[in-house]
Image 1 (cartoon, rainbow, N blue to C red):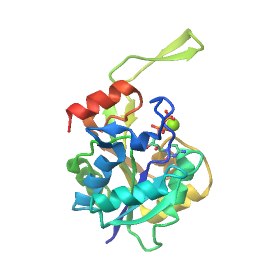
Image 2: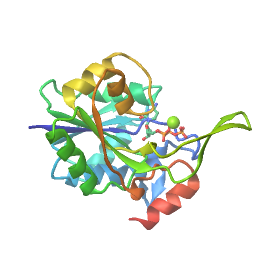
Image 3: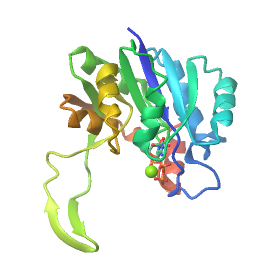
Image 4: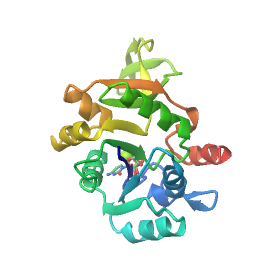
Length: 220
Ligand code: CTP
Ligand code: MG
């Protein structure tokens, strides 16, 4: 059974506000992307890796993968305008006969192997996909501009992280619709796919603002 990982790293990182894409922000003296790349390379579950790079940064991504000795990286493609478009660009390099595809945000550098194991266990149970989730710690409110409209019951809410794992053919069909979504599970859900939530990990924090970089560094 072949397991492919698509790392989406093509975002601009506007909220981080650096002079380069977020994937190349410095984390302990290395590009942010190095951390998730190395961890997926080292994972016992993953056979091959595709990276969706920021446009014009394909070459630095290839060099980084070589420097790190990431022999599982079989393709580096140019990402798209949206996350979903970058996922589609990555999936184009995943062969038809791949069994499982994991999609991971480069913006989440600290990727524990146990999370991948939980996702794979869910797929072995027969789910179409699996996502790591964590309870939402804050009280959640719906707003209209700066006015609170209502307080949402957070009992049944989770924050979804990545990596997210899918039966490859299911993700491929869902992504082909061309729809936009902030995660892959949403695409599969919209196609009637059954997605299991497994426990996420606080360290899978998505680096968004500069303070997140400092926090992620403390976990390395
Ligand atoms: N991503 C991507 N292609 C895009 C947009 C996002 O591959 N066109 C990836 C990012 O590289 C990141 C993940 O999707 O790994 C989550 O996106 P986000 O955290 O929003 O990153 P950016 O879009 O880079 O950041 P910002 O929204 O602040 O510009
Ligand atoms: Mg973004």
